[in-house]
Image 1 (cartoon, rainbow, N blue to C red):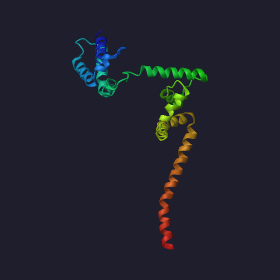
Image 2: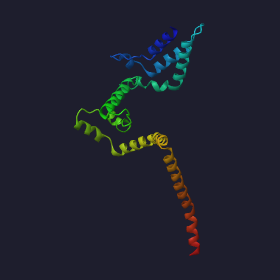
Image 3: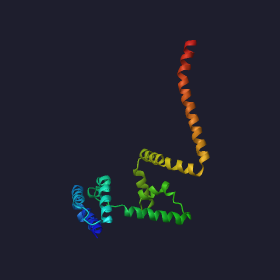
Image 4: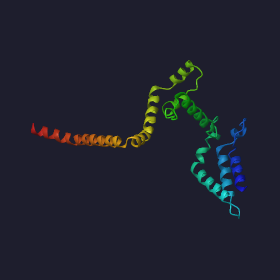
Length: 200
């Protein structure tokens, strides 16, 4: 019972869930919410009886507020930013179900390549989609694609290592041999040039 009351007090401090009018969210600042949460954490203490649920909830609240508290209050300063990602998770769930339905496969790995395009572009017609694509500069698009490819390299490496460890290790050894040979050539070239210069 105490744990449930503490949970309701936390929701009240965060003004969550947000109602349709969203008036309270627009009138509340992140500093006010932070002060209310810190006051609640300092005030909330387990009672004399051993209440495991209350103690665990309070410790979890203190730990997560210390780690993620400031990063979770941007929705009170940025208009239109929701306080949670439930709608986004629901949207990705629909994308995964749609991908399974049209492909007939259980894996939704293709969303890693094309899912971001379905999220960013929400046009209702082809001309509107084209206008949204043309707004993005090509160099900016290429830069973000490179960042995405770099972020995917560790996952791709572990996937190759899991499915074909022998070929993956052989590729690593071959790359190491090529790099060592290149560095060796780089070290030998200045000495060879200097020797050739003196012999001439």
